[in-house]
Every structure is written in C-alpha cells, then in structure tokens.
Image (cartoon, rainbow, N blue to C red):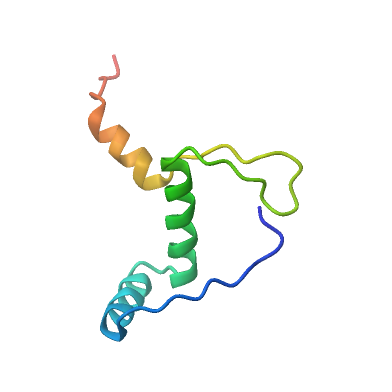
Length: 81
C-alpha cells in the first residue's frame, strides 16, 4: 500500500466530468479510486513495474478485477465432478 500521495491535475470537459462522477457514485467509488485503478491497469498492461512509496521492492504488475474478469470469460468453465 502506498504511503505518500502526489497530485495529478488534468483538464476534462465539464459534462464528461459530471458523467464520470455520477457513474463513480453509482458504483460506490470515488473518482480518485477509479483513476488510481486506471493508472495501475495501464502500467500493468505495459509491463511497467514501480516501487510503491513505503515499500522496499518493486510492485509486480497486478491484474485488475476487470482484467481477471476478461480472462475468466475467455477460459472455458470446468464442471465440478
């Protein structure tokens, strides 16, 4: 878990921002949580490792829940015998 934070400022269309915030609220997530997950997914997708603040070793690219769901959809279900 990261211990330090840094601010990321970006400019987006106000209507897009409002729609994003509504969707986040519907999913009981904050916009910051979603953006952090997007960044983790993007880094993992490109095989980029990094050392989280407060950690001594690099964090391996970790598949997100959405990546795990995509993989689960692709693999055939095995029946329990």
